[in-house]
Image (cartoon, rainbow, N blue to C red; front, top):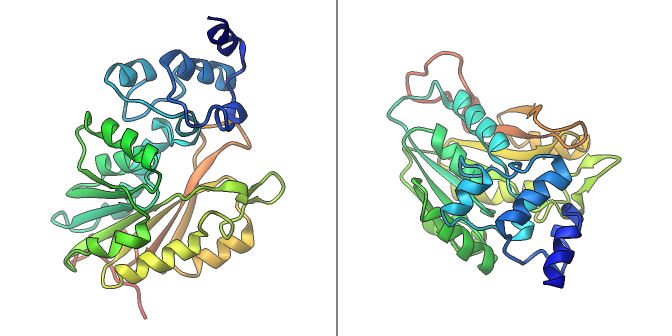
Amino acid sequence: MKAHHEDRARIYERAFLLSPEKRNQVMKLWEVHKYGVDSFSDPDYVCIYGMPPAEWYGRGVRLLARTTVECVRDSLGELIGKHVESVIHNIAATTKFIVVDPFAGSCNSLYWILRYVRNSRGIAFEIDGTIFEITKQNLSSLDTDIELVNSDYKLLLRNYRVSVDYFIIVYVAPPWGDALSEISGLDLRRTKPPIAEIVDYVDDVYKEHPILWVTQVHQTVDPVSLADLKKRFDWSALRIYDINIEGMKHGVLLGTSRWKPSTRPPMTGFSRAST
């Protein structure tokens, strides 16, 4: 009883939930609410899979403390999904999409992209066994087509090659670690692994396919690392979403390989980049 009382008296903020003593504990519903209240003045801050905490918890969804902090919430996930759909909107209606997430976590970003991308299915890789088991259980209660794989994406991604008529979407969101600096912002070369390394590897696996890259970024991005990544793409666009307080806003860098978005419906399904 004393320990429980002490937990309720503690401030539930990012540092505590990511601490060694707490990070791998499954959160109780009151803890999810308390994190929302203590950190954002909102008990329903951690909305995922289209549900507020009381609803997803009641359906058996569970999150570790670290996932509670690190997961993409619905407000951001839905914006990403809508933005992706707007870029591929003019691609032929019969086109089939594979959405690849090399760093699954809660899979909430992938969940929202699949909700907005027609004719799509997802493949997600999660190397952490505990996160994998919890997310697998969470996904079992949802109406979504995601194959979750407990592996490093580099070990098994080549087993998931598809016919050349598939369009590939890749959601790139590796752990940031110490890549985010209060001074220079997010250095895309210092994520774990570096963003460019992920892009180069996945692009080699799907080198016969048009690809849309969706890279999660902070509102401030190190300009040199951003320029280095953008030169890999045939087209790119940076979008920061106005859903958090200043200094805590997130967004995406969209990029393409072997095609460019078109403002007119392309006759062949997508507009290939010139070489």
